[in-house]
Length: 282
Image 1 (cartoon, one colour):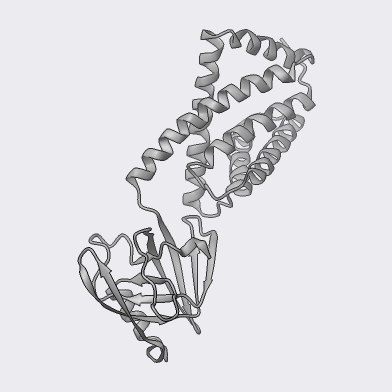
Image 2 (cartoon, helix red, strand yellow):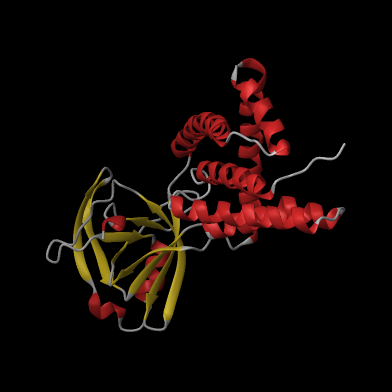
């Protein structure tokens, strides 16, 4: 049996479905992305899918293009993923959400009246008389199910994971790359200037202290914590860059104040810096 596929309808379906999948994936991949980027990613996926249909072909190359290359391009445009770890994670999450959505639509098909809509929609795709409103209705119901599922997953993930970032501390021609914990409990400020203080551990503090002329900028900061009170040496560096796990620059802070701790901040060495709670407020 041969079917006639209307490319405009095929494009619209791919655009809607890809947008739903990418909008859901942002909860697990990159919450800083925007709906506009999700739309651009979905648009690229729909265009490339239509191009694959027009070019035809079979075999491994076509499979790789349709199921790997297009998804990688969509994730790159939407989430700006560049490294191999991010690409792999993006593929797994995208297809995981696709399977969940397939399960949701399967449930709707067999256990609700929406199944009648879906059947008519499928016939409509091939007969050219698809009811786009019905398709959008089905998609929206599936989208709500996906969003609720992902919200539960992301909440559980937030409870079990630390909010960590990659940091580059720059001073003159030197740079130090470390991993930092974003801790809303760190409210430390320098009393005279009111500067927020980001604290590094003993090892990184010694590296910063050895930077040329840095000791001329030391200022003492008093602190109070659950472990007691005392004073902390601090210095101002040229710049601090904050990156996510995909090497995307999230924020750049000029002349941040760094507190030089005399102890290790993480028992297992998972992070070497504690960011101030005001980090993303300026």
